[in-house]
Image 1: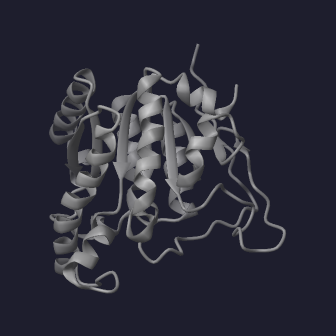
Image 2: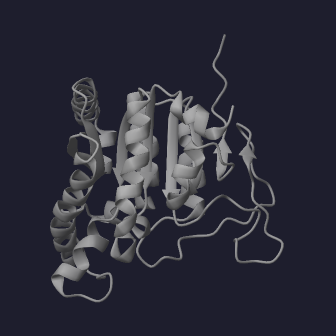
Image 3: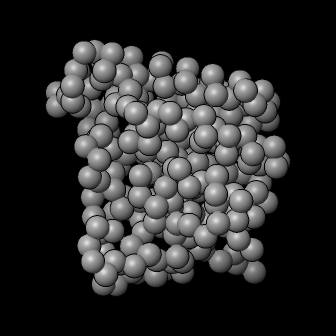
Length: 260
């Protein structure tokens, strides 16, 4: 079964997209991304989007030229950007007659049993009502979490929270490689078996200037989700439509085998 067929046959899919894929000039990718989400939705999957990009989206509206370093300005940018980002998603989703629901979480929410249970119930109810939840970190109240993993870990935790069978990690890198992709001799890793320690693989950090993640956080997130029985696909945002058509892109992390 191709990766696309596997996704289209899924019961519940969490899709995470990075800041660099949906902000700045790349905000033009949102309609195409949403079209892929709508295709999964039409195939019968319950779809959850975990989207970074609030700070990066808000910065130009604050008349700033680069990502702010101080926490207060990051929070201000997030407050403005989250509103604009969700509005852009909703405009694109409306074309497919899908309504979005915004859910903002912090690391504390995922660690606190009461908060975690409340989040699970809210997300489950949104899905039951046919709503597409859009989840992001609550950057306006976060402290050190605001720079945590570019939402890769959050996406993995959400996948575990709702028992998703598929997690898709989208960014500006098309796959995991044996070395940074710009290096000569780097080769794409098409499949990672469950528990594979990836010995000898050189994994780098984010180079976009906006996202705080990178290959390392994606591998950690993929392992976290796979350990809970979720299959993971890591690929580039602009390639997800082709993947759904059957193209062989990205890196697939096999889920932990179910126990008899």
